[in-house]
Length: 276
Image 1: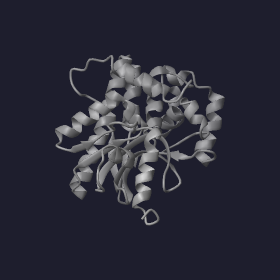
Image 2: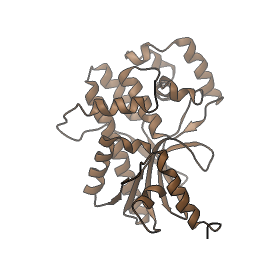
Image 3: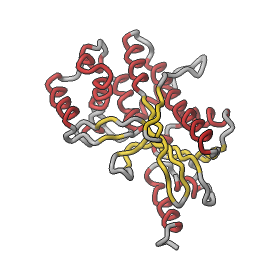
Image 4: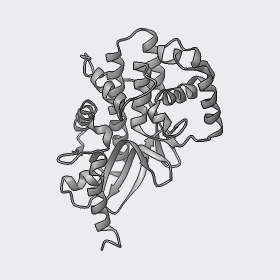
């Protein structure tokens, strides 16, 4: 968020930072990536985030995204998810799932993550029934390309839930996965499913920004993180936020992915007591 603020030559002021990424170490030691922050160059408060899900097998879950999809489906249906009549589940090897289930239940080698990038991976795994990836962000790119082929008559999208816990808002996407399973069973076009998913994520950003603006009186939103390299998602979010009269700062000259982080670090260091 700080890198995009600096890229746009912003002075130090409080903003709503929407940080959607793949993997980032949070201040609580967990893996972040779907965060809503109240922040300026001097500090931040994490006010909302995507519901966490275990990375079954740690980094292996990034390389084999079926583990992410299985974790969400197990959370929804328990072992009955293995009986779902969809292709992505049919190719899961039962003996492998038994091992991963033990990881899930014991927490062994299962770091928790609120990553938006991993949510894209889990959804795309169901749509494309791909168990492994060949390069970083492969499934997210394929999901974006697929969604771009759909010509919607409206901005319909899947539903999700937002609830509050200990002063922090949590975005629960479980209903999205239920809807994807339902649409896959009905034989809905993959393009439609991919588009509905993108609209749902954009509405997450919209609804959380509305909640935070109402509570804290901040109207300026900064978008950053590698997930916003997805032009379809970025444009959907911009459209929804502009319609709700937000002022928005988006990446301009520098990338919103990891390559831009160092600029934000340098500016933050300049505002720290040591920097002064």
